[in-house]
Image (cartoon, rainbow, N blue to C red; front, side, top):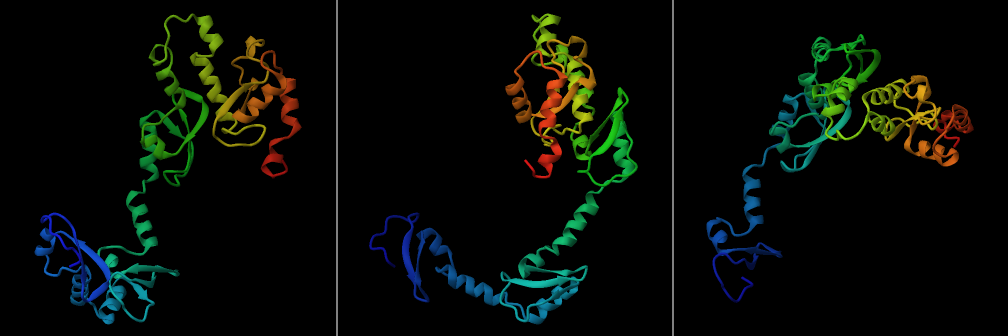
Length: 295
């Protein structure tokens, strides 16, 4: 005992075990009197001694699971041991004997078992799309993270794509989603705005359709730098303000990322923009230069 004063049964007191004098330990009297051994290390040694398995027993347990044990001696149940799985002989893996006895297994076998238990059939997935009025046009189903191409029965004029895990979590046709959130159904709906105000601010359903059509057509890729996804803008080649009859013309739209769109308007300003300006901007450095690393 290193302490000279005893306070109460719940105050920790420092002491040294005579068998393990290199480490100062702390325990309350409440805990100490309930323990058979006051030293953690002494108790651990006793338990290890009781639970020590022979190498032959351990080797047999690995062999029973179709694993080839590579280690030639056994230390204890918490030491990692190298082995080869008969199903995946090219990989050397490691595991502790305790974890293996608790159910751990070859990582690749575990992954395959998980995929097998959660894999959906093509018929099941395509039927799930159909329940949401989405008709799949692909012939094969790969996995839940691979995009599947489809068209919506309510918007059959455009091909969309989405992985099954998005559909299973509630996603569907983007344009049906726009309809559900547009007009008086929008949380941002302002009944005091006139139709002219909505057109000027671009907060009407047809404009949202046009924007999504442009993104879908361009595969969500910036037409200047080649960036896929991220913050994108549907740019009007002939400006929205001056060319009223082309506001919803799909051919008048182009996908630009936030950076390229900002750069365009820094060069050419806002208002009265033309398709000639867009062509000059795009041709200055085409997207293949960015993709090849020239720029």
